[in-house]
Length: 124
Image 1 (cartoon, rainbow, N blue to C red):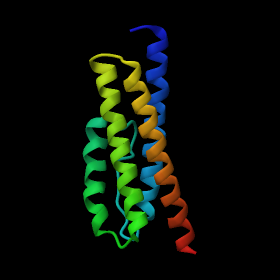
Image 2: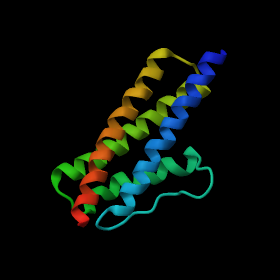
Image 3: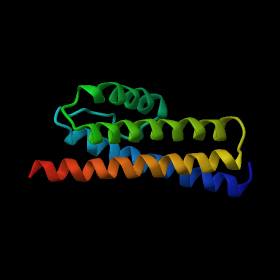
Image 4: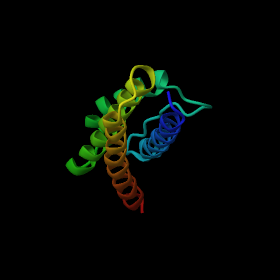
């Protein structure tokens, strides 16, 4: 893999980690808080099943329809970004996958940030 491709994957891995951090914060603020793995370096082997579980439990949260949709959107787009990242890093680097990772991270970050702000404002 070329240096430019490796650098792009490093940047996207950081983005995946940053959006995961937002999700961790959101889960801690939910009416029925949920815990995600956060100790040390979290592997996708730990994080992916935990995020899938958060998405499954989202319907049990006492949230409005919009907020539940934001949680679901954040989870599924983060999961899609991780899937594309794994394909890119383990199988074949393709620019369209890189674009897909970036787009999914943007959608996940936007949804989770809006939910995070709503959860913070509803606590007051």
